[in-house]
Image 1: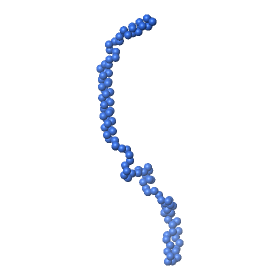
Image 2: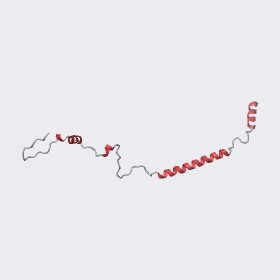
Image 3: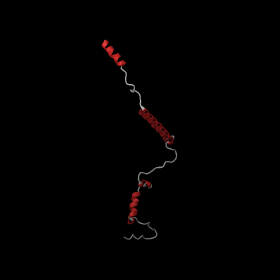
Image 4: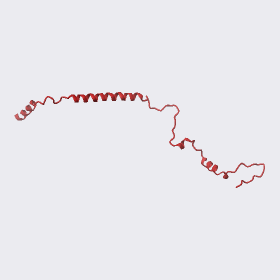
Length: 109
């Protein structure tokens, strides 16, 4: 048992060199640079946070709807609009109004 106790006492008596555990000027400079960087980051972030709106809720006023494609800019097509467009492109398929005051001439082809 004495040998174990002797080893513990011998280890406690051994001292480390003077400069162990002390930071040098480079460590102090590095610490100051990191503290300055943290301060500037906090200042910048607070400036950016002041620019944000107080709430991201949508306003109650009229909402602007932005269409996805240029085709959405025109008014929506009514039912039967495609048929009317087809008939307008082929005017011979549409007969003019008939008069009741006499025999109607058939349209010329």
